[in-house]
Image 1 (cartoon, helix red, strand yellow):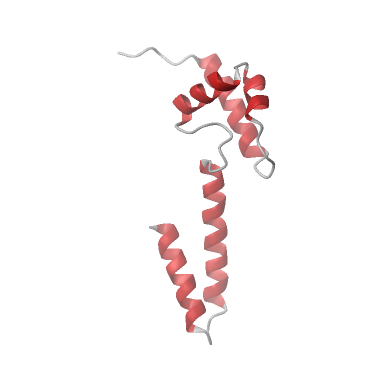
Image 2: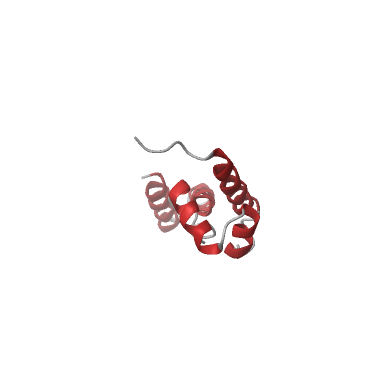
Length: 102
């Protein structure tokens, strides 16, 4: 049986993840995140990956992809709403919705 998670470490990693999500529009400095969490840069990356399955500060984080999917769905709905005279536009909207929701 594995060791129970260290809640203090998880809390510091969670604060770093919250900062990544809160400041999603700015570039993430992994060294600054590590310092805030009380880790060295490389220890932070290993610990963050172990806790969340992704490297902290990676540009393709889950929240980034969630925002991208939301944007694609919104644009697809606009395409569908304004495609009465353009079947190509309607097709793009339908295919995008199908791909995002698949």
